[in-house]
Length: 177
Image 1: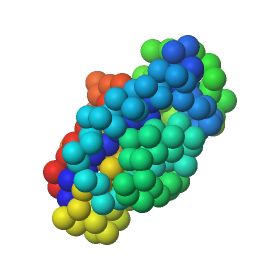
Image 2 (image 1 turned 60 degrees about the horizontal axis):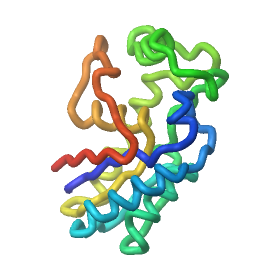
Image 3 (image 1 turned 90 degrees about the vertical axis):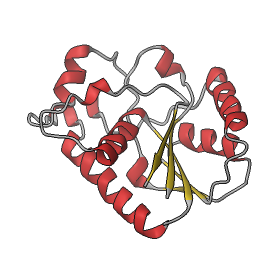
Image 4 (image 1 turned 30 degrees about the vertical axis):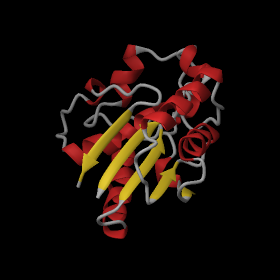
């Protein structure tokens, strides 16, 4: 399997440095342009299937990139991490470290625990690998979800600095499994 992971295009909350979580924020004009640029970059890649988060910003990104060339299937396993009561607030370094600490695994303020995020993305990857061997698969998702997918593919330990892997809007990652 060849697996492509893409984060959705830019939103206004990205520009404002706000925590989006599973709040359904649409792409802004820059995000639409980013997705169109990505469409050109990937025009020679033939995807067999695309899975996305069910949120609008990922669905729109996938539709722009693919223009109907393969099925787009929204799945809850790819939704952004639920950041509970801190959604809509400014991203801080303290929050980032607290909520990405595997051993602490805090779910204060209703934030989805990092272990849960890693588990749900790992289980999805295992199903995906069984279902689509020898195919080219696109996943369009979110920053935290993509980070969890990456570490599940590359491996991690309980003291991992998950924040060392940064994901930009409409950034592409390719893995051969």
